[in-house]
Image 1 (cartoon, one colour):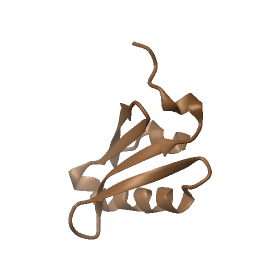
Image 2 (cartoon, rainbow, N blue to C red):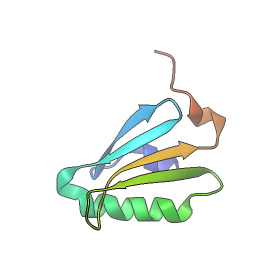
Image 3 (cartoon, one colour):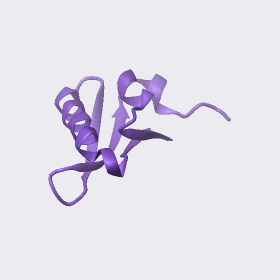
Image 4 (cartoon, rainbow, N blue to C red):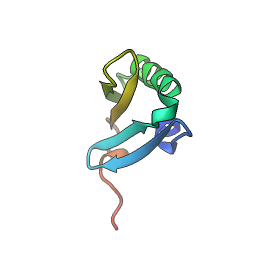
Length: 77
């Protein structure tokens, strides 16, 4: 989970109220799609993921919803 939300050169992370949206960079969708597949395989106990495809075999976005309350609310601004 922590590794996912740190971000990568393949995607950017946007904080939401109940989780995180990971958006694949258009020129790195193959790499991002692999991250999505790995996250989906590991989801269940600590977090769940909801994915969006680019209309083909690749993913363009993923919403990560953690079950740990420490991740649930964005930090105060």
